[in-house]
Length: 222
Image (cartoon, rainbow, N blue to C red; front, top):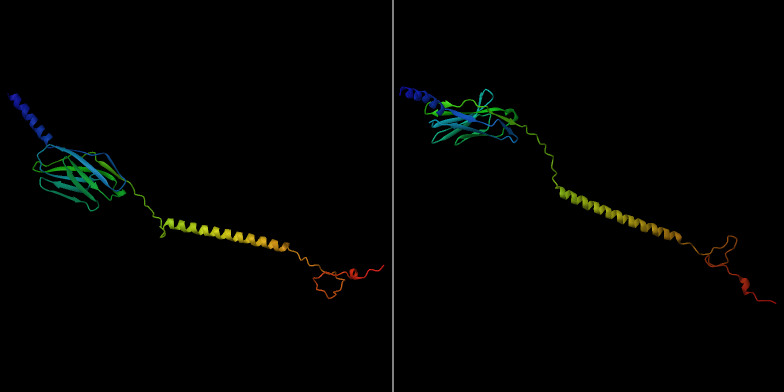
């Protein structure tokens, strides 16, 4: 009988310790490429607490409190460090910390801390392995100056100008070939008007008339 009572008394403290313990689980690595991170802190708690506080801490020594959220059965409140954009959300057995507009300088290890504030006893979780949040550097995009005239209009105008240029060139070449052909035809005509030898005298006939032979008008003599 006495032995049974002693066994029960030995297990009561152990049950109390197990009941009031808070365990937290975090993912080990979180890579941020768009300046936005979502860190989920899963926890287990079997105590009787009704008022809780969850906070996110930065650095291996948890020196910087990024933001926190506290809740009870009736209300929820949250706050964020001025150097961070952070908001906490409580959802059943997990706390979600949303961070945005993060910079590469904020790359570090982050720890979740869950506290049972009321009623006593006050309990908080042992330090977990934390989550390394790696914020990638965002490349600076240089915007090329955009033309006020749309590209398709420039292409259309260039095409029309090229067409008219080719048309004018073709007309000019055609005109030049016709002019050249006419010039060749004019050089083929020759002046067929007979000319007097330099030793013959002009007998009153026009210069274009041929010289007559008067011996044909003489009477025939036997």
